[in-house]
Image 1 (spheres, one colour):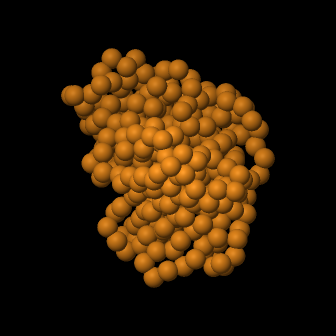
Image 2: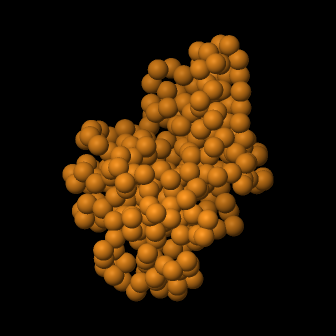
Length: 299
């Protein structure tokens, strides 16, 4: 039985994850259980402590005698210091998206887990949406890549200035792009528009994917692949089982010590978000992603 501590509770995700793992109909009944929750604001912890989860006043109390931690802070800048601390304890760690709010801090996290060898998974749930996984399974029939497109809501202004940052909501589409088209994006150029900016992503092998950064519209995420022999596109169902699939991936990582997504891939996501954010300030100019070398290994 994997005993889990949820750390940071200033988003809706802890409640969702606890319901999935500890709920009455859970598929994790004999495999995992969330036992504690902690946040610097104790009121946030108590508000999301359900299904037998104990709200803790201190971090040390929360992680005592657990086998895995889940870092669930709403903002990327909350994640690195806590993730590095947990890596030092050798615990398997799930980090909610994004890995960090800058590529340099993402590299700090990667290097910490490389040093300790602890397994870690960072992801947006949309990476694990059933629609995306099924879509990827059918790409071979479309033939050699010709073009790709993705579109998704890029901001959530109701949450203030941080809600408008691409790292907060744009990360969902970025992770879908990486899941479908792979790693290796090396440069971006952004063309602004009234309802959406369009970022043209260029991969190291020359492939290009258009990313439509939607604003002021209904929440929508979709992706399209155009191949030599056909084309297809998929839209994420807002009621899809993406959270359930992500929790399965996280628990499986704790059980096996193997993550389905490397932290290097997660760091590349942050590099992409950094680059697109900067490229928006210089429309029409191609900007290379920052790709500082990091140690290669289990991460």
